[in-house]
Image (cartoon, rainbow, N blue to C red):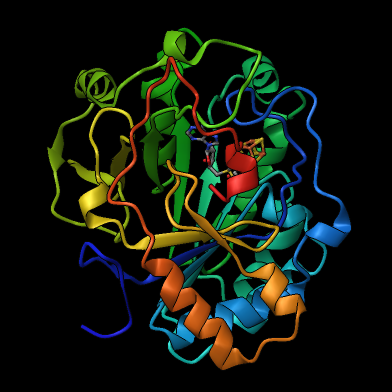
Length: 327
Ligand code: SAM
Ligand code: SF4
């Protein structure tokens, strides 16, 4: 094997690039009510992000996801997408978005070479959507999804975080919504990332097994061997093109097949979502290192990638929020 190989023999082929820690929503499980965002000077410039992305692709990374925070609030996002999608060796540029601004950005993103979109939507009830996001309007997201479907993306997948007692009664409706539109959907278990005040995470845990049991009441679902190279375990829905995925960081550890690293908005290379192991790329970059030196730092950083995460919903040991991490 060539490229980036970690101490456990896993090949790193996937970079998640957080382009901003800011967001136009305030999902209760993702952010605290009062968030302090990074000063501009701490945030990587688009040129710095482009340089780091280029180094990763030069080291064998074939997939990059733009995320955040909300990537569509970052000024110049379509230009960044366009410059990254053209990198020789990159197979796929994707984005995760809350879709609030997608009506405006679907076309520019498709034209910029973004191939796949993941769209987060946790409720189809306007009032509940607003309370779960603190400020969001469901109609904006629905319009955004329609705008994305009008473009030529290879795939659009919905993501829903299911919280017991909050939106677990919408598991079936969300799947129906996806299936009716020919979209895929993944259900995500809530992770204890960052201290929040809206609820106790141990009270809202809802496992993928629970979700599958609910879905079996309305759908004929069968496990599929398909993978998109991520932690989602997929099921096929009989009579439909849609796939249903389950991302189970709490109930089913998937670290043995981990192929990814994350770059935070501040240029910290994060080797694992559930551990603090990281390496600062911003300082050497601003000190004027060469492209070769940048690649060497990245190669060395992969050497400290931990074997696995250990999450405990009753004990939030990771103080950074998902929005600051690059979800
Ligand atoms: N703003 C974009 C969005 O919401 O799609 C991209 C960034 S967001 C941090 C990426 C994904 O992380 C979303 O699907 C969100 O629901 C999920 N997420 C955020 N906090 C989480 C948590 N504590 N546990 C599990 N998933 C979380
Ligand atoms: Fe924003 Fe995405 Fe976090 Fe919601 S999950 S607050 S949309 S970054």
